[in-house]
Image 1 (cartoon, rainbow, N blue to C red):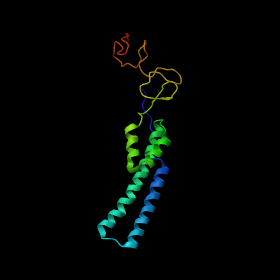
Image 2 (image 1 turned 90 degrees about the vertical axis):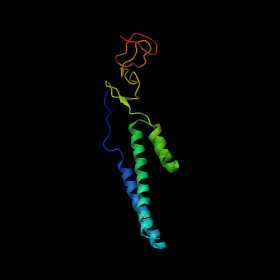
Image 3 (image 1 turned 60 degrees about the vertical axis):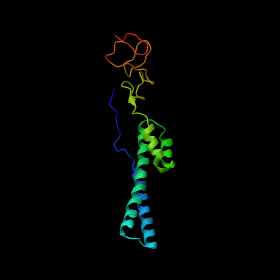
Length: 154
């Protein structure tokens, strides 16, 4: 099995830019509200000043991570990004982390990505994992008989 090649940086630059813009706009909004209505004390105003921009920026960065991670895993990255944005209360992001596909395995002959657990490459037909010669299901090394069909593996 070949090692997984991960891209440098897990969150795209555009997500960082959107997070910075959201943080700046929300800080300006908080400052405007506090200047119009006067702070109800230092501590609540300070919390509002910190928590609002942090939540918005963190949400934007999580959506950016969902986009990049789904793209690396050969999933429907546009669909998952929209779900992460539109499903309220961060439930779309939680669903992504619960339902995401495992890292793809790459063929050693042609380099095509495939799902983990495939016995043969869908592009070139090369063996990607040891398989039973009778039923062609994946078997582990060291097994003497196939657990699916009972065939001899030696």
